[in-house]
Image 1 (spheres, rainbow, N blue to C red):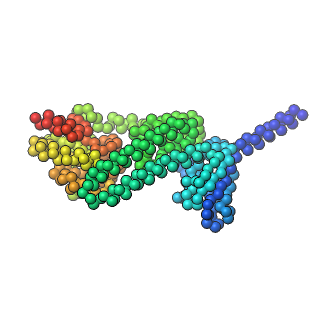
Image 2 (tube, rainbow, N blue to C red; image 1 turned 180 degrees about the vertical axis):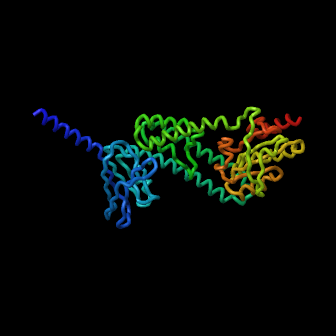
Image 3 (tube, one colour; image 1 turned 135 degrees about the vertical axis):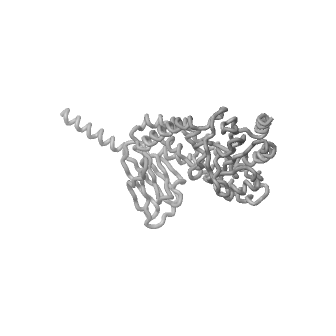
Length: 387
């Protein structure tokens, strides 16, 4: 009798455990096209794995039922460009309502705390993207006007403010949700293609923080393992680059640069040996850079004949914008080079450039004397050198 009772209890417990792992997702798609399907994909570390699909009813209703053993990421989607990322936990009963063309902005969503948190974050992120897009529109409206440099300066300041806001919001969001996989998703948000809210170079602390928490909670979950490997790789890379990066201390040699001029000729930084050189990183789209350019014109006219040279490297996106910036700011007299690759330029990792304007003052042998001298500071230093 006791054996039968123990066996019965085992069956009940096993059944209850399975039931607690069952996830149900039901909802309604507003104004669906007749005969269309909705799909459920599991998000792995390097792929999307299709797991189920259902045909929408005439009124747009659908139901999914799936067993999962731990919190996992899924995509509820209509097509490749119309989907909702979900963080689903065992036992959840999720209901949602969404328009057929915008699953990522559900009209209502209940029963999934993780998905609700990601949806809330997405609203704030999209608000930032909308504000940044508005700045682009203002730039286009003023592109042919004489006050463009002042407009660019103002827009750049606003853009930096918006990016700083979403960066701070994301860090706060991570700090408040370190025990949830939503913190992992927050690490990889973008405001534009390849423009991430968090930058490992500046925000490595948060990558390590999320990695530590997630790896202790979900050490066998593929996306967590992928993050863990990536953080180890990033940490090793950053440690290796530290010694190779130019130091602001006097005496460090400036790494070689060899890039084309607007005319197509390649000029090396080392070709300027024998002159005191200002190695300046700038771009026509950079408001503070454009504001500093008149000071460069002034110091060049004062000290060029006494052995001063400027080697200016642009992080512009296009050659036309780069050349127009040179012309508009009257910078034609000194050396200009660029691979016109924006933040993908070879000089960015070489000099670990995180923002522009950025400059290094080099002695006649190519050693760094000082860095990031602008305005009166640059004039004072050059006056001291050429006294």
